[in-house]
Length: 263
Image (cartoon, rainbow, N blue to C red; front, side, top):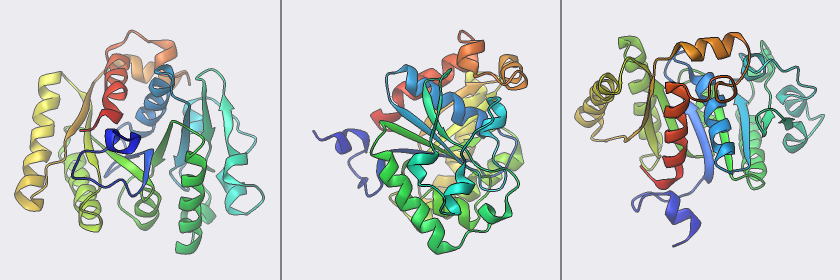
């Protein structure tokens, strides 16, 4: 069995970067960036050489959550002052690399289609140097989000049990599935009060997808609500470092371990 076939289910053709994982959400406030950071860290602890790409153009905040002051960022790449590979910086405490965004930059949020396509191609080339690349996408389904999710072999759609979050997550799945019926879309339920409640939330979005899209996105994992998460974010320290035995940390580690084994 080839590496690609071991990652993708039989009915999906890996036309994209098989080791690239996009993290998306229909709306903000669902913990997407925190999850992207923690997932990257968990993959690193599994022995994978990992890169976290802050693809939330214009509202980048990966560096803020980690308390970093990056010397290089995506803005310099867009301005063609350095290559995407050169923009990667080592986050020594976590053991993974980061390509930081530039918060509040209108130039990044309004890139042309051609420049976005070039960025996608560059990202796929950079991904060849890593075992796993995690893209923290912006919230919503706008053009830049859709373009940057293009290289992903797997797209994780993060939702909570809030009705607006479920509605917007469904909208993202609908648009993405329509554009590419072979897209490997998986659901992550975050901030669940319990595993059982997380399963109920997943069933809600699953039924909507089955009824209206004739599509059944699998459940990638459930992350339980955990006060340790807020504590880690407040202190700008990764959860797996500050509270490695917490419920949320355990849940993300379990998800990471199953991620490349197929839905």
